[in-house]
Image 1 (cartoon, rainbow, N blue to C red):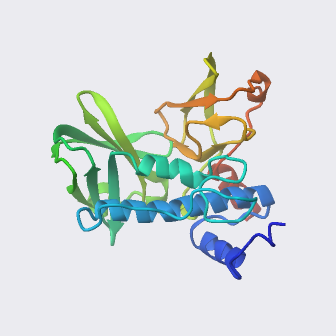
Image 2: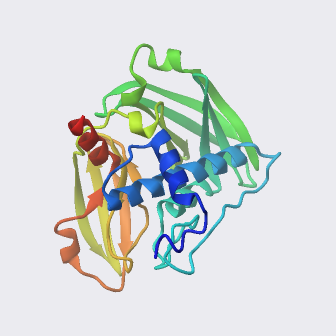
Image 3: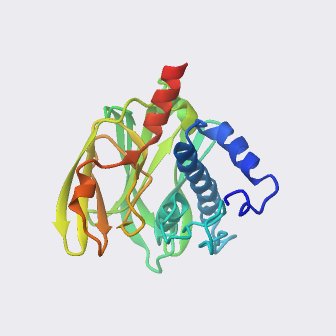
Length: 284
């Protein structure tokens, strides 16, 4: 059925080709689906951020496609059952009124703010360089004015000045844009391809609270957990998924459903790139 619904003559081979370039390629079918969704989401994210960063040359962005009329391997961001794929979660973040859009080229990192707000405001950009265990190596705060309806470069950094001799594959730069003591948006920057990141076995905990029409889960991690995917039935909608757990930062996810079954959370089913890369390294 899946092959019959694949309408591109070389679609499956292209997915694997691009996956090989950027991600670990799993043998397991479910893992392959998981990674293919990350590949799609990161690819479209690259385009969205570039187009929004190009404001006012580019004043809008659309991606193909929204949803599926049947179960298929496709460009959709919402699958046939109504479940959000990784792309839809990424796009819901990248199309917010105010975002941070980084651009890394030839060891030069440029960080842009993009605002669709019709009012200018004062803000602070917080930059935190840390390793994947959450040890902060450098911290910097930049005062800036975010101009209305604009894309603007806030800072340009040479990676050699930022990282020194530290390896690129086990450090990250965590960004927060703050105004009036409120975090407007955040962004995490990595310096290596996902397949080259030095990820260890995920180490995190979570707490579940019952709320109206669902649950609230608060995650706390002790190392970087890359692209955490919470596997729940399609009748459960998650406010976020396929997200990174940054060590030392708590992440809150709201799960709504009319079919409430607390037993689902006794043994939370999840996947993450850490699991796949640890497995790959063990096999080697």
